[in-house]
Length: 254
Image 1 (tube, rainbow, N blue to C red):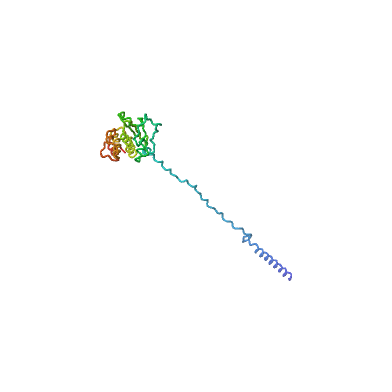
Image 2: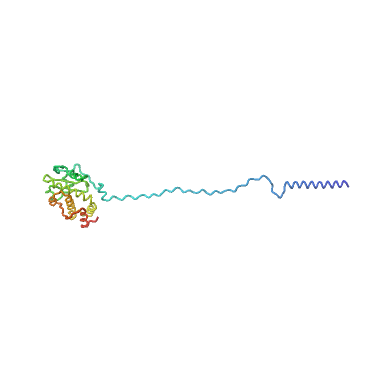
């Protein structure tokens, strides 16, 4: 009996031991829980960087070319010497002309005494330069002269030994007065030449009268010599600017 009890107790002990073993083993490895190994660091979610901003290349500023300057006017061309023609060298002169007067051999010096500078007075008997010699009656004249836009600041003169000082003074002043017409009244003079009025006798008479009336307005000239010349002053009540009005009355457009 005692042996049976002991055996029974032994069996119980074995069972308890088995239970304990199982219990301990269960605590060590619970099949319902995941294994507790070393923890891996969390894996960061991949980040997606925005695409780099596209940079437009710097634009080239648009430059507007300035418009070309307008072409020069006829007056600008004239004043700048654009109509100038070369003079022969030397300028033809068949025989030396007498001195202008006892005080001024050169009429250019006589003009300068009254402040007229920049004008060159050239004696010549060449009709291609001294257009006064182309007049039908030039063979009987004692003086002749010309102003031409082909030589802007030049007046051409000629006189012979039969001329007197008052005739020479009238001639030089008259040609200088033609220079004034172009220098101060370019619009009407140029318009007349462009519109065919240079061959118009009425316009020719107007320009000659204007030139002579102007010099008479300065005083100091022999009125009889002016009246008996090929270019008398035929305008009563002449005034500076009369030439423009005369041109308009003839139909010159300017």
